[in-house]
Amino acid sequence: MKRLCLLLVVLLNVASTSSNDNRITNRKLISTVKKAVTTDASPTVYDQLNLSQSGLQRDVFEYALRGWQKMGAKKPVLSIVDLSQPSTKKRLYVVDLLNKKILFNTYVSHGQKSGDLVATSFSNVQSSFQTSLGFYKTLNTYMGKHGLSLQLQGLEKGFNDNVFNRNIVLHGADYVCEEFIRKTGRLGRSQGCPAVPYAESKKIIEVVKGGTCLFVYSPNPDYLKNSAYIATATPSI
Image (tube, helix red, strand yellow):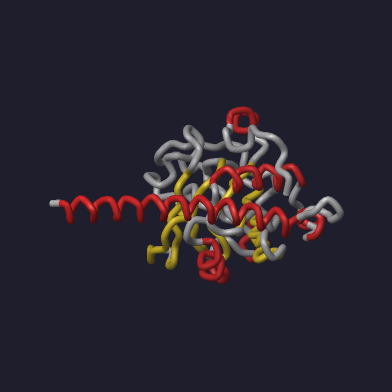
């Protein structure tokens, strides 16, 4: 009996140490990224990567950084879907914050009922065929009807916390391409999923899978006012 009690104590100490180590690792990651992204004498990563030239506004990037910090992501990879831009623009940005690199800048779809050229309507409701705004955590991959796909977890109650049940995932699609734009004047649309060009989908999914931060943005007044993830002080990185 004494041996059993001693074993339980050891196991509890190991679990506690592991949990503490994870928190310490996350804090160290954020601290390391802060140092890598900027110092008092250097420009921000937004300026270093010339993200304004790619169409991404500074405030959108800063919102994304706030959410990345708050969710305590395990990897310094930040993905932004900027739905303030029309679908004819390359409005997906995948950024390596630690090494200060743009890993991908490409097309991404919005939901069929969110709008035509520009997404203006959003929903967290099953079968709405609309995009859900907010911060997501990337989960695991699986093989589906679109090939390799990535499950997503919505982190914002009322805005996207139903996406897993809605089967909203990151996947590749043939309708996300420049040929479709030439024929229709806009990108193809999904059932609410952030679909990317099929030719790039596997590489993108491999980079962003496993707990990275995905931010789907639109200048929606309700979201900007009520999101707990962006209603904080301006980030320092």
